[in-house]
Image 1: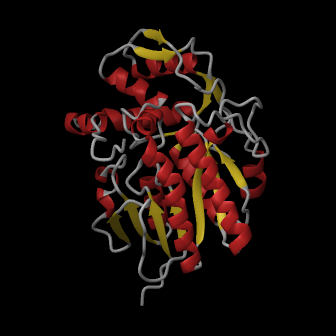
Image 2: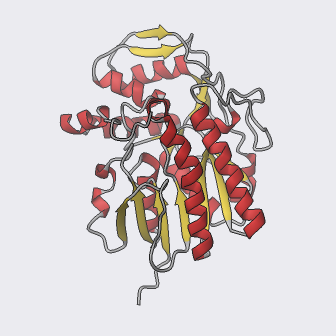
Image 3: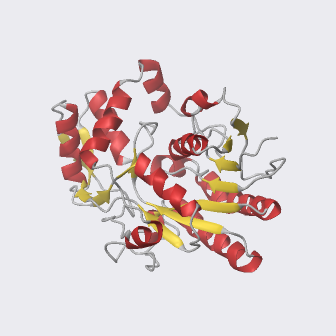
Length: 331
């Protein structure tokens, strides 16, 4: 008889989802991965396919989902998560944050499973409070280009809390700040893979605006640890997970130039609409409730990430930089 606890991870072939699959398999779970591969890559989980403790469903969670047998936990991480993705597939982004979370919550209710949803620091929009605490309600433009992602995640939180209060479902909400590490897509539009991709190709690094906007970068292993602790906790309200070590984008670009030793120039382009000017999590709640804080410094994490990308073949790098969304676009 198989006594392993079973967990469903949506978005399993994505950057964060694949690392979560690895972690829960190491913890002794039977992991059921689900992904429609719209932004995920099978290369991220192919090492798991031979394992008896892993199974994979190629499926869109925006459509009805069913998992046979017992299910103890669900991690809902299916969603485009970068501007270049959700600007190309805005309707799918809204659907996975509404229909997708509804299906996952319904499955959790059916199975009496605990569910954790991946929310985001983008629920704070372009924040007027700094650093951002969980009590801040945000400054979001619902009809701007980023609104499809921001509002999908805000709705997702509201739906999750409704299931918690109305049905008594065990729910957890992780507000994830900028995270980086191996398996990111070089062309996903986020600043770190964009800079590394430009450095690998010998191109100048592109900074938007004057580079004074700030971000805070958390290494993926630290984030996965925080997610694990939150899932296993008794805390149902949103929790910020990220690294509060804040840096300007211009300083970050200079760090990448020093790391890669490519001696590329830094060039400047117009700042995108609604691009947040500052981003830094207040992690006091995570520290007190979960006894969690990041351990991997940016220098160490960047070195690990750069070594990963340098070790990829030209074919793998090409696959990371060429994603065709045509089959998914709805007009």
